[in-house]
Structures are given as structure tokens and as C-alpha cells.
Image 1 (cartoon, rainbow, N blue to C red):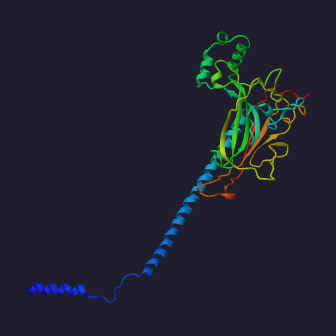
Image 2: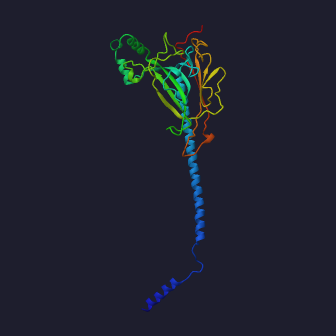
Image 3: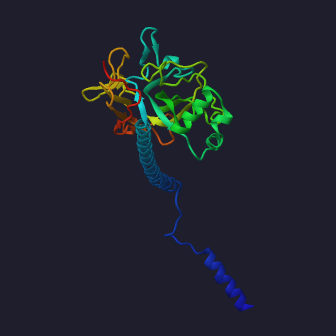
Length: 331
């Protein structure tokens, strides 16, 4: 009992012992510590977010530059297959009637679409396409007769047909699905759609640009309403700057003349702005230079605005068009 009582007094004494040099944090000290910690953590988070945004901006700039290079490579390869290039997309093809090339096309260009380049190319038949295989498996003499039979035989020998191609620029808006400042649109008017090839069904509005009644330079459309066959090549093209004009080497025609971000230069002397102004000579090649500038900036971007830093260097590509079909000697 004595030992238990002594132990109890000892424990009680320990509990009642005071330590004059030990005390807790005051409320002010806690608030100061919280504020300092918040500033440090906030600064670190800000730096992390900035680094992530900078990294994302660099990725977007790199991706946009790659898209522009792929776009200009596609355009020059496409134009490299051209048979005839117009000096301007809206070239006059019939001066007497005031008829222009694009004025004959239905539903193209629409409002806001600025044509940049127009040419004819020879599209080869794809042997892997089921409709093409069906066409070649059928004998022309048993499937067609008269004009259609001759057309079938010609197509099998040539294994291709002429297609009108037009490149245009369309400004993007906040209401559409596209990102950047503007986009490149490719329009085409082929002689046949893939599904219509076995029956040689000609695309409405199409007319053969060769022969006694029609040619490339003075092409007049056929009967019917031309379809709107368009596709988007890229949607991070820069907008033209106000007051800026296209710059072409001496001896070249700029198309369009009031653009400095997507335009082409066509060598003079190989094509005429007016079909009655000059004649093309056999063997004269058409040299084409394409200029293209992208911009990674976009509206409502989660990584912020690029401002002028989003503009990329202007790409330049030159292509020599070797096609000389249907060119007539000068008088």
C-alpha cells in the first residue's frame, strides 16, 4: 500500500510539473507560416504551369511547321502533275462573253473563299480501286457503243483523265470546327467519280478540255451543275496582313496579288492572263513558285495567345511543269 501511494504521488507530481521554457504557436505565427507557405507553393506551381505552357507552345509551333511543310509539298507535287496552269484562278476564258473560269463553277468559291491557284492535271486510274477493276474487266465493244465505246477505248489507252484543281484560302471563325487563323481548301472537278467510272458517267458540268470545241486556255463547262468537291488541307494558315502584297521574282505573275501568306507566282510568257493577249508555244514549260506561311495562334486557346510569335517563317517551293499537251505554236 505504501509503495502504491508513493507511485501515485510521483505520477501526480509529473503531471503537475510545469515547463516554463515550452510554449505553443500563437495564432499570428500560424497565419504568417500559412501565408509564407502559400507564396512558396504558389510560385512553384506558377513556374510549373509556365514551363508546361512553354513546352506545349513549342509542340504546337513544331506541329504547325510540319503541317505547313506537308501542305506545300502536297501542293507542289499536285501542281507538278499539271498539264496547264492558269495565270490567275479567275482567268477570262471567253473574252467576248466575259466568261471566267471560276464563274462557271457552281457553289465554288463561296463567300470568304479566296482562290489562289488553278490548273488542269491528268489523274491516273487506280488499279487497286474496285470500280477501276470493273471498268478494265469489261470489254468496251460489249459494254458500250458509238461515242461511249470510243471514249472507253481512249480511256483504257490513256489510263487517266483530266481534272480541274483549284486551291483557295478560307478564313476561320470562332463558330466553326477549325483551329488557326485560316485554312487551305482544295477543289476538284474530275471527269468521272469513282462510282461512275464503270458506266462512264461524266461528272455534271464537266467538259473535256481538249479537242476542236474546247481547250485548256478557253475551257467552257459542260451541261449540269458542278458538285462542290472540296477538302481541307490544313487549318493553321496565317491571315494576310493589311497593306501587304505578294512578292514575285521578275517575270512572274502573282496570284492572288494582295496576299503575303499563301500565294503563287506563275512564269510569264508560258500562260496568258487574257486568252487573246498571247499564244503559248510548244515546249514552253510553266514554272510555278508557291509561298506558304503558317500561324500557330488560335482563338480561345487553353495555352494562351501566341501573338506575333505564332507566325512561322514563309516556306517557298518551286516546281517546273513539264506538261505541254494542247499548247499551240505562236502565230
